[in-house]
Length: 279
Length: 264
Ligand SMILES: Nc1ncnc2c1ncn2[C@@H]1O[C@H](COP(=O)(O)OP(=O)(O)O)[C@@H](O)[C@H]1O
Ligand SMILES: [Mg+2]
Image (cartoon, rainbow over all chains, first blue to last red):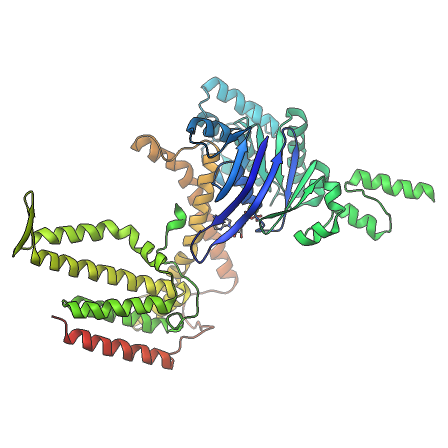
């Protein structure tokens, strides 16, 4: 379980550029859950997940990963806690640097102290998880790949670390529709098959509705909504406050006058058929 | 760590110092440099220090930021002072080991470090209160008479503008890439020199790639908007000398006369 207790983060403290990115935020994230984080640009989503992964320290408050305080003086313990969390940054393909796909995916695993055999098996496994053929891609240079493929390589590099908790910061930003669809399918598969705990930052309410079982809404660094996507999308006050729209299917149903709490396409179809049947 | 860099940073504001013409500011800064180098007396430095402190107060840039801008050079300042302490023959005040500290040494050390600190603070004040755009604009105007001799003043200014514009972007980018590689278990802080040099590769390669990508995009975007170099380009906000600029010149002029009069 990941737990945040009254966490605040202030950037550029004591300068004219001081900015409170996260304001007194507390929450718990359970193992095996699929949590989505939404909020307008600059609401603090990226800052929040970077603190959870131990890359930046909160200005005040505490963060626990499986009961271990990330700020603990015991450096080995803190490191092991941090290593349970895999973080896929926005535009992760920009961090590729090795000559071949295989080497790049292996980079993290080697840093974590895996031997050759273990590294190779992890590379193979994570490549298959993101749908890249090992033999076909292993010796290609990352720069030879398409944008979508590069992003898979980057994600595979994080999966090779076998994180217990996987954080993805807007993983579909800038992808074409088909690459986007398969990316989302893979994330969903990862959650169902591997039972990984997933935290997903996304601007797409449609994706959140289909994938997540919990939605956390941030606005100006504050937690303004926390609940199942259905509850949140039914709460106009939260949506207005955070400047979020409802999933498109919900908007459509409302427009054509069907009263329903459907938030995914499938639910929407059911609702439409039901109304049609009644007539 | 990377956020601590104040070099060339601009702090927006609307003090008199912010509103002065940048050419006048650059000119007066150079003039003050010369005055400072001629001054050797306590009274002279008293006046100059009072003047500098007044400028800091007028600019409303916080003292902490001024001190922070001195911090990277603290060792050089201390070193300069120490060298002068022991390298001037004269009346010995006390001896430590083989070094004799002389009255003249103390005086010279104090003069030199005060000079350096004043120069640093005054130059910092220039960049703190002048937007990079205005600064390069002023540089272009100051250099433009040299065009005749083949100095590409516009191109130089444009290059500077672009470089300054991209410093924060590159810092941000470096920060992001470092975090991303740290998340993959990269370690930049431990190990011997070779390990550390090797650990920079995962930062440098993506950084260069992104810099080239950005340069390409920028060149394309500039061309698409019809940029063809300096000839015939006009400015949206032309620099204009105002009454306050004349006052600034007058005040610095009077101050300099007084300081020079008491320079010894
Ligand atoms: N490294 C940084 N230094 C200073 N301010 C930052 C930094 N990163 C983010 N911020 C600021 O913190 C706020 C939250 O940013 P971020 O967490 O990136 O939001 P989001 O991911 O929701 O768009 C923004 O106002 C942003 O400008
Ligand atoms: Mg973000």
